[in-house]
Length: 147
Image (cartoon, helix red, strand yellow):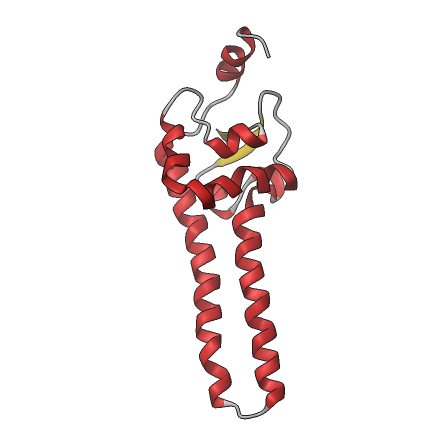
């Protein structure tokens, strides 16, 4: 990667502001917490039903909801046009850097795993330079304003 290439890429993209990115992240986190809230709510329902079948059904639904929450957290940026629910609400999208196809499933997992591991440290990187988190650097992505 040459020195001139990132400056051209920065000029070519309308980078999403840190405030918009934080707002989108809060919405996406709210989706994950809502799914986990449903899971927690369903944990108390099997006590009202005495059968083993209902216990197994509720347990299966709980596992499904836990996987759904984890799946959304990791793969939400691979939704159409690189837009999770939060990014769609705030008109942002995740694209490859420096070239720009929409975020793939692998890129989404790579960019969101550090968010879960290094949370605040990862977010500090958004305040500098190209506004790319550690996860963005790892996945070779960037968050831009969508049209």
